[in-house]
Image (cartoon, rainbow, N blue to C red; front, side, top):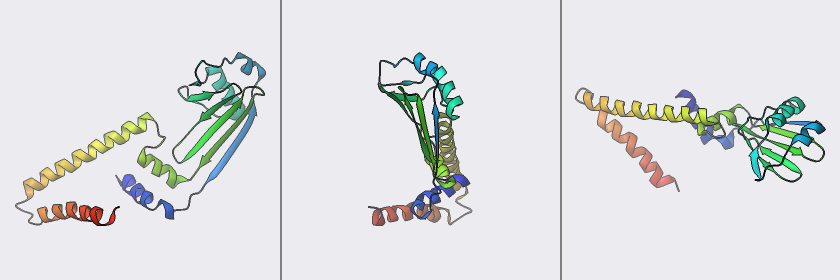
Length: 177
């Protein structure tokens, strides 16, 4: 919850926090045997063959996951490789075998902000933040239930709850447009 709260603050002030952008570029050359074994799929979008993924790992040191969809053209394969806190892409020239890879990172704050939003994080993280959100809802509802049970011994309960609802509503109505 602390990380979620802190990244909420950093998201609200993202324009005031300077990004620590860095770019890594890698280039390589695929073997002619790898290129010769490639068959362009019928559709323009498809996963890379296992042999090509292995060759890319050896050539430029980049591990491309099996399920990543690539854009296949007559002379090139293009992979968009978005990631939390940055971006990456790879281009493979089908004529020459030249591989160009570029990875951009925007720093730790951008990474944590993307985790907060679930941007480019994958299925496991999506499930985690969904389960976490459900736990927060349960925590809030049981907290309200406890307030109902203890309202006789705490006279400021309902004014505080009402204030917690009314203040955000007033701010939304008056200042959010």
